[in-house]
Each structure stands twice: as structure tokens, then as C-alpha cells.
Amino acid sequence: MWLRLRKRPLSIPTLYDRALQSLVKLALEPEWEARFEPNSFGFRPGRSAHDAIKAIFNTIKLKPKYVLDADIAKCFDKIDHNVLLSKLNTFPTIRRQICAWLKAGVIDFSEYAVREKSDNTTTSMGVPQGGTISPLLANIALHGMENRIKQVALSLPGSLAANYTAISLIRFADDFVILHKDLAVIQRCQQIISEWLSELGLELKPSKTRISHTLNMYEGKVGFDFLGFTVRQFPVGKYHSGKSSSGKLLGYKTLITPSKAKLKTHTQKIGKLIDGHKSVPQSDLIAHLNPVIRGWTNYYSGVVSKRIFNQADTTLFSQLKAWAEHRHPNKSSRWSCQKYWQTVGSDNWVFKPHNQKIRLLKHRETRIVRHIQVQGSRSPFDGDWVYWSSRMGKHPEASKRMATLLKMQKGKCTHCGLFFNHEDLMEIDHKIPRSKGGKDSYDNLQLLHGHCHDAKTASSDKIAVSVQEIDEDYLNCNPF
Image (cartoon, rainbow, N blue to C red; front, side):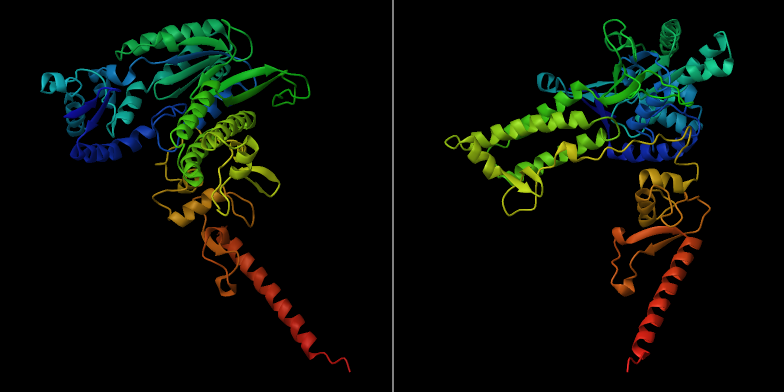
């Protein structure tokens, strides 16, 4: 039995069912992670929205393409149970249990106050949102979309290999894009996907399904928004143009930035936080704002975001200035700025209290680091714990310290600069030995190959012996 929250149809299973669903997920997930399509990124371990955005960039960076940006209407609510169970094709015991969860029904309390009793109904379609296993079941139901689109390449004229790589479907949960250089192919893919989804009892959402072009104007717009990012190509001169693999100028540049809608939502959220904390101390306001700023900037730190971050900082300054002036209506604007903004180093506008270490983070302080896409069909269950520790900073087969160091060093040995392999002997080394006062903290630790560790130790011992010999010669020498 599920409890349904009506504002958004979320179904919350009981504690017992949540534990049981976690066990079933542990049994099914490794098998399906080995079978899922490489360009499926939503609700999968080791994959994220950033991998989907990077896949789009890699697809269009050498050639402008038409894009079908689509969304599946009420995906979780309308999946056909029979088709899902047929795809699942698992053991009878697990099949019966999943079937029971799908058809368990819900207790709807939206009209409880009126009726003075709950409305208990069974569910004949859809996957209940809110369950531990629901995202996995949704991915299983939608598995096969990419392969179906790739089959379109077999009917296109020309080289099959070239056509196969020219068309791409990139999916994150129920949002997906299809990219190809030919408009007719995109329109045909839209019809094929609509037919394929109808077999699952699903359909595309007309208000969120549109065709555009990444470089040229099509139906009044250039580029598209996906997962909070704006993907677009701009015609530029030879000094800013992207280049092909052979070094030829392309005449355009591919830029992925935070979308304007998400920037507006972020600034409005910060404005509401500031308005809701007009009377609290400055340090408390900073404590509420910093997590919001840090989370938002970290999400967009892998794309071209500096200009957007500067805009966010400009808006934030105006909001804080109004907050400061509201607290002291009888004081001048200059007085308010001197009270709440301090000079730290070369920065004259740091929002922090006097004689306190806490300060407000700025959007522009976040470092831009390009995201590295996950490799093909790799899975955290494939046994390569070095690769996944380097990406995620954790893995069941690695200790917390070793996994953290692998992520910090991006999978490379700091001594030889080569990538680690899961078959290599790896050892944790103290940069400054503990015998010489070195601390047992991450900034004093490094992960080395076994032979690199031996070479470093031997080199350090040799230097120590040389210094000792010089000291003895100096002490033994007699200048008279």
C-alpha cells in the first residue's frame, strides 16, 4: 500500500517495503546496468546530467545538427504494467513481488477532510513515484529507445557506419533529444519514437516537444534548453572558431551555458531567502545563502558559466544592498556598505561581519572545470574500482581514504604521472613523514604505485645520507 501526496503525485511506500525494494534493486541493478544503452544517463549510478550535456557537446561540436527536444507526458503514471513486466523477464518470485508493488493501490488523502475517509484505489498503470525501485523500473521500461533510433540509420542511403554514428539519442529519465544533420530524418524519428512509446502506453508532451537547429534559425529560435543548460552554436571569425580534428576552421563555436530561466529562478530563490531573513544577524544570513550559492555554481561549473556567474553576483549585490538599507533606514547608503562589506586582500566588497571568519561566497569564485564524460557503457559493477573511485570518490572494493585520494589525483600517480590500473599495487605515502612532523591528513597524503613509492623513499634516504655526510665533513674540518 502506498500513501499518495496530491500536490505532486508522489507515492511513499512503507518502511518495510522500502527495505524490500532496496534488496530487489540490489539484485536487478547490476544486470541492467550491463544492458542499458550508453546514452542513457538518468537515475543511474555513476552517471549524471553533466554526462548527458557532455554527450550532446561531443555530438555537435564538429557539425551543426537539427534537434528534436522532447519530453514524455506523465511517464511514471502511464507505463503499461504488462509491457514492463515482459521486459523485466526476471525470476518468478521477483516478478510477483514487483507486480504486487505496481498494483498495490494508493491511499489518497486529498479529499479526506471532506469525506472523512480515505479513498483506496488500485493502480492499473504506471510506476509509483517515490519508491526506491521506481527509477530503475522506469529506465527498464524506456530501455530500447536508442537502439530503435539507431535502426533508422540502416534505411538511410550511404555508408551504414557513417549513418549509424551520425544519429544520436541522448536520454535523461523521461527527457531526451535526438540529433541529426537532416531535418527529414529528425521528423521521421519523431514519428518512430511516438509509435514506440505508444506500445508502452506513453506519448510525447506537445508543449515540451519541438524541433530546432543548433546553429541556424528554425521556427524562430536557435539552440535548445536541456536539463537547465542552453546549448547553442554561434557563427564566429577565424580567431574564435572551433576546429575539426584535422585543424580546419569550422566557422562557429559551440557554447553550453546555464539557461536564463534557471538563472532567474536562482536569483528569485536568493531574493526570497533575503526577504525572509531581514532581522537576523549578518552571519546567519550568510549561513543560509552560502549552501544555495555553492550548490548552484557547482552544478554549472563544468560549462561556460563565468558571464552568468558575474550576472548573478551583480544581482546578489543589489539584493543585499537593499537588505542593508532596509535595516538602517536613517543611515546613508555609504554607511550601510561600510558596515556590511569589508576589504579582504585586494577585494574591497566582501560581505562579512567585522571580526568574524564567515563570509558570503561569490558565484564568480567557483572554478570552471570541464566535466569528463563517463566512458561508453561502463558500469560501477564492472569490477574496475580504480576508474569508479576516481570519478565518484567511493567504491565498495576500495577504502574511503584510497578512493578519496584517487578522486583528488584524478586517477594518476603523483610520482610518475601515469594512470592507475585496478591490477596495480598502490600505496599511500606521507609527503612529509610523520617522524618529521607530517600530519595524517589528506593534504599530506598521496597515492603512489608500489615501485614509485620505493623510488621516492630511496631518493629521500639518499638525500638524507648526503646531507648527513656534508654535516659530518663540516664538523670534522679544522680551519686552523
